[in-house]
Image 1 (cartoon, rainbow, N blue to C red):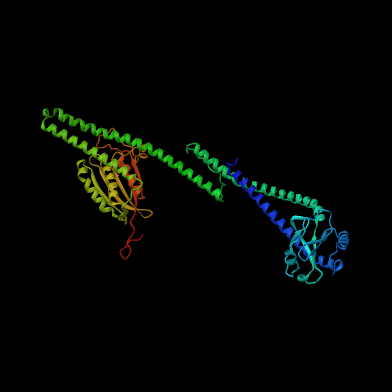
Image 2: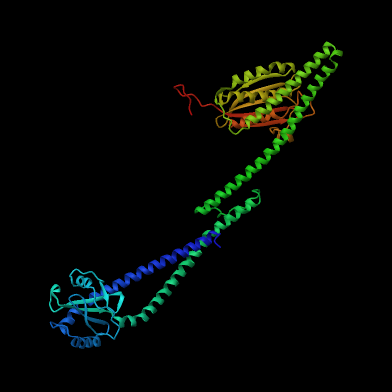
Length: 501
């Protein structure tokens, strides 16, 4: 019953309103009764004194004469009860049916406070007809005008037993009417409260249902929380719903990325396993030949077998190195050690490292420099790896007499542009979209010199991303391929020799 937020809020509101209603009713009733008694007692404060002057002035108590006076008084004003007390508070005479008066004496302390000029009302005294009840009264000394020297007191209970009996019915009716009005008001407040709570919790129910559906579907299909079109989220519920929508979109994108990453990793492992198996098989074959037929082979044949095994071993080491380097670049906690890097010097160093291998294939390597930007902000080790991978990839493609050009130029947005262009056979259009994928290898049917694991360009793409740069490739079959890399330029120097930024 109380599993929903609406039920809990409704129950809490009901309990609070009932409790507050009861407290306010008791407070109002007590205050009203106290004020009414105080007003009544003030209005009748001099009643006892006037009765003493008119009926009991300066004569000793006599039960017969007192009862005659009491009888006349009760006929005139039946709402009062009159008692004559001695100086100690003992009841000397009264007018009441047999057995109605249950006290023999009245406490004089309230009477003495009443006779003081600074008395605070309502002031209650003993009720001679009830041992547990105290009632408002009027009192006056009898026999003298000085309370301390009085031979007795006239004690008048205001609103006596007869008035209590007559008032019970009216008070009960008034009480029932007040309770009915209060219950109607409480019911109205509860209905309004329930309606307001319903309006508030209805949106929470929609949000809870959307989240539960999202969870039940394994976080694969998001049920969006409805927000008013063209309006910013209003209260906390709307903001929570907007946050849930954004969180759901983010979770779906992460799951999609994880699935794509898992698929790429599976393809990478399969392709790398294939690429590792090829040199391993060749290496083992040549070594087994040397072990089994070494004595029958000539020195020249053994040298050929050893050189081939060495090349396969070098290729295997290169594949393993690329695999671990890509894994390191994919690590989330990788931190770059950035510094200003002179691009022209870096290009010259890389080209010099490949010049001998290019000359063996009769491929020319050259640098072309344009523009004013000479430095970029980056990790020099990774940038060297990026450029080496692009140049190594480019120098394998042209036939004898071909050319590889590395160009430096300015790019928009304060970027430096570096291009690597070859005069090879080019790349088919359907292969360009996948050229930076881990698992992509162009033309596996070609020789090991031309083919590759597909990791080199993946490493290039990852290094560019880590430097917040851009990379693209343009190619035409039969004409060649051009890789374009744009990297953030280093901050310029200030007049004092320091750098901006």
